[in-house]
Image (tube, rainbow, N blue to C red):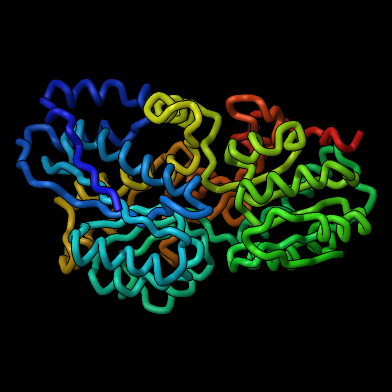
Length: 445
């Protein structure tokens, strides 16, 4: 467990006005609004504890450390702008280790019972399966996460009054599976890729997250002229892919989709695939977004496809955030996962300030006001629009569910263009966010 208090000097009114004037350069778009709300308020000396359950150890620490960094970066910037109505934020992170239901629930109880956190601003914990929802609901606080789970929809809709303060800031993993055939169809219609058949081979990680995505691919593929001709579930974690790749090669499918998502494991899969490749597009779920994938796979990574709904956009907001993140944490840091907790901390801070302040455990009335503001106000993050569909208290994807990019989070398809580059991936879908076009992978030659 780590606890951090900001040692930044308390900002003066002139400092707050300066922060407002430099909002675009810092990518902290929420800072200007918070600085304005804080104008004329004296620093009270009171603090607001903000919690997080993040994997600081274990196989998912590569993201967990960045989730912690993103939260702390946002808290420091918000504190420099006056905090929330004169009160300074104190981020407190508890290690959720391997992200089991027991570990995540214990971390949530520790944050609530020992530290009295007013909100929990999280990255993802994929193995908890909503087990932490009940202690959070019992405390009546705000909990925002990126668990990317269709289970969130089901639990929230089972009792919206009880789970009013629980929000999922990205679309459910189900939509990854729905979106992949859409993206593949778009590439095929561009004419650069002319597949020799319509087969998709599914290699599925054993975690529920991966299984849900594979099921959605299977269900959606026929609508776009594809068929799933091969399926196999692999254990998680795994680095030995030879047996399953040999089976896939005998199919020679047009597309191989691997829904396991640990970057190191997937890099090993790509290295082993490239030793005897087929003319198949290779799509990996999430892992290649992180530079660790390209660092391990090297030149074998070139041409790989991957996707995310929380990838930083190649625009003014996204690029300035990425540079600010690297300036703070170094060029080897991964801004994509850091942007998730960074952005939601801002969204929460604005919602709480407009509600008149934060709410401690048990202060349900105040937290209901904050929850209403989170649903009422859209926030433009480095990865697109943060908006909660009131049916689910969750984000929805563009263009898979909504055709309107102003109210939905873009489902982004990337291709690894240069494994040695500072940013190896380039965004190729959807418009208007794309920065590059699809190219046939070099193993097709």
